[in-house]
Image (cartoon, rainbow, N blue to C red; front, side, top):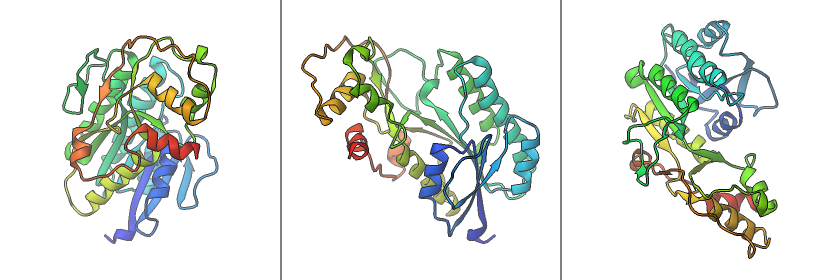
Length: 282
């Protein structure tokens, strides 16, 4: 197989998928994307209007016959039904198609740190057992079990909160009246969208070189930060007053760091929130 023919399919191709496209070499990869509704996309990806929840999606995957599949679907509502459909049922359809592909190399399942539901002051990593505490975490963990059926041909990526140029909720919140800020001050964890995309491309390149990768990575910048510290820093950077802000007591949340990402040799472009938000604000 020629390297130039390596086909990557991004199922649920949205903002993260487009960022992957921008960081992937179009001379090496042929990129395809599935989305339920088509919108403006980068020129180097061939988009298809496909609903992964429908059985017809299986034939659509087989028709493309990709070597790499990135499953990056998101639930459209915060409900048990939506999480079960988009993460578990959709991935099961993808798995059925994979079993019939003759060139398949690897599946990347984009999961979430929501699987860590335990309340602890310990800093958690991918070496800790995930203990979901809600329907979302349970559905994600169930979907991870589906991916694990592929054994060494699957990698689970547990992403913490994604932020980036088109994900500016924290900036908008920081600009608002601090009376609208959360009533509690919790730990927060994040990864810049570009770093998440770059890491996925980094792992794909490792596969191309027949180099081993792990079956699970926690994808986070590794700098857990109290929510009010992030909001106050952004507000100061925007030259807005902060002297009347009353910081509530630290209530809960989790602290996350990746052991395996740090050992992989990958270097973050945005190693903590100050680098990322500085670039966005600029």
